[in-house]
Length: 436
Length: 175
Image (cartoon, rainbow over the protein chains, first blue to last red):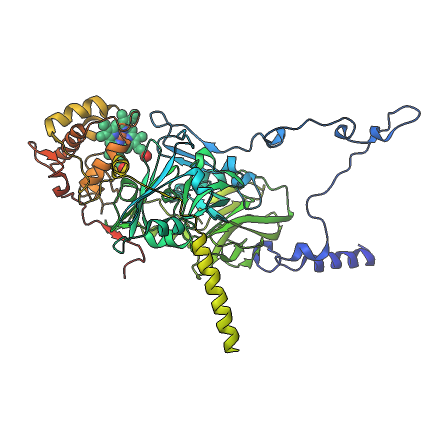
């Protein structure tokens, strides 16, 4: 290396920044400083000019520039080569309609989930609801029991907000004794994040007039499971919404068309889809899905009930299980973080199994009870490395490690899992799920 | 400046009053009949249970015809959820959560089975059949006696083994 080479090298290093934590983690703004492109080396294929005497520029251009493109379509679909980007699911005999499909986060980037990839959890299939006949009944401890049609709700002042929905059973596979070797979608895909538009529930409750004895509200769906959950009245009067639109279009059938209850930050099941009824009551009704399911058994045999908000959580999506890192060098570590309690305040990343940590950059704006994308530049040495992330929310709550999380519960208890996800990178660049 | 503040407050007050008035108030008042038809929720007090009755013996017939193929002999499970047994297992290393061992209220069984079971044909059982199948299922673990007849008058009085097994974490964990 001669003098000028060395100078160039030093300049490059200072642009990239020195590592800020073990395992090759760089400062979160390192990529932004030098204007050096890390998106991957751009290779320009050498072209042989085979055209005859007077070549036109078309000979040098991609085919797509030399012929007219396709015509308009009424509803667009992803590019042909994106065909593999699909929800992940398996049908179980005798209970085809009671199961899940998962968002393939490892194939996506950003923080909004395309509506067609929003996770599904149904208890007896997706009902075919006739929106022109569907009604929402509000009754029980109210002064005036009321009925609303979709057409009347559409005349109310609406709100638009971005929120995640996460199934209470998301990531439950990680409570198994051995780390399941599965993708981020397979392990953590019962989480999605959308822009929701609809009518604040508080406005409709005001119109019905709540009897002072009313403290809970039974919410019921118009599906074949008649999904029903008791919701604290205070939550409905706070930030709850009757969502009519998802990412700008009518809520998808799998998400509750024509209307779903949205309870930001609360476990997915209570965000009742195909909402048809709200009954104001004094106490909770103790429905099957708030007793038999979605309760957490502890080692002493008692179970936690109505643990509604979801804790702070994060997972590295890139790199993650199923990906192969292409040799030592620079990469971007990227992932998603969220909390049912509010905004994500900080995401920290470790590339040495949790010995040292670096602060990740958060994609702005950071929205309360929404998925936040985090990123951090990383220089992989080619050695065995354990990557993990932890989220800290605006209330100061810190995402736990797996062991202390597990110790709170009885064996087999898998609801509300929010412990840190560790990925082991081996010297060949293979990424595996690991517990330590 | 105080006078300014009062003015601002007054204007704000007007604006707020304005929005309140602007609420559409488009809900149509529901009739008692349409409420009765839709209100299928049964709470722990059993106040909304429909009239009807069913015995353990009747329940066995209902169970064998409508439930056994998915929930197994005597509710022992397979291929779908196990419904019976497991009492006393919740503090063990392998807790078994079933209707018998885990559910705190018998009223929830009525509410759930009526709205959601049998899985291929929800809402197809009569009230008598539902009381009967509950009597049968609960008799397997001796939660009710062999000669029990359950009805809208007796169901809410059944004491489930795990009645006190739940701790509410709303609005906050107890401490």
